[in-house]
Length: 338
Image 1 (cartoon, helix red, strand yellow):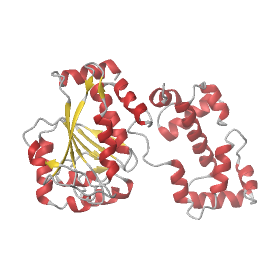
Image 2 (cartoon, rainbow, N blue to C red):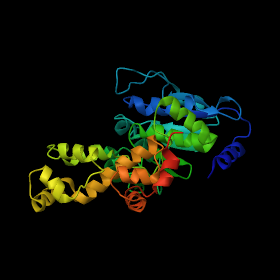
Image 3 (cartoon, rainbow, N blue to C red):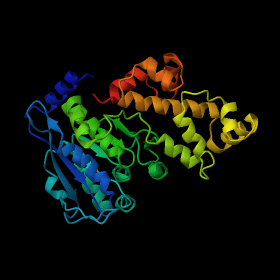
């Protein structure tokens, strides 16, 4: 959908041009960034057609008191009951360690269900999906949460189709997002849907964050993923060298020589430790480097392919399709900052 179509759709559903009401639901021991990340996005998203703010935000809890977070900062809130008869455009259930208690609080869950039943859009950030799942609204739907909570969501709510990888998922009018900063990505995507891509890009630039990322992007950092697999750091220096020298010949014999090992022994140990072959690791690191260049530079596709060691554009395209399910040109169009 292009920007004009997005704007037309948003206008057709919001003809009065009043700021859209976004209501955040909090409870004790939330993750502070789960709240303030999306709150920052919605609070500063401009409606470029009217020249005014696109959203009006409220933070609510069951009682409307000060709510503790996982930091030294507590959050003031309004009573949720105040919004039961209001026209809510977007309801956002925030996550945090407190979700494990909140999901079992029947009174709170029922109140959230009432608010959600009146909202045009319902969203969760991080483990807020556990709380929304307790209302039954995620049954039969695809959903994601922080990777550490995916098993809890799947085990506790078997009717929810839990996916572990995406940074956010939109299933009908319900959106769920992965851990912490993924809430910012989801909020930017929502702004794109409501107000158009130029508005979302303006917010992203102001926040010095990534451009609007697709929900299909993985919530896992490739670097953190390697570090999680390589718990003793055996291959840390090698991975850094590979990242700094993606343009070189990185055949298994070259990598083995860097580790003072035979190619056969290195390949066996690396595959066992890292869960993928050295060749697949090289492809992943080259793809990561190419992603960075496509996001932050104006280098042509051929030049990016050469700099990253792919040698030609077609090899780079195949690697992108395998690992990211998107072509390099489409990736640049989505994520390159103008």
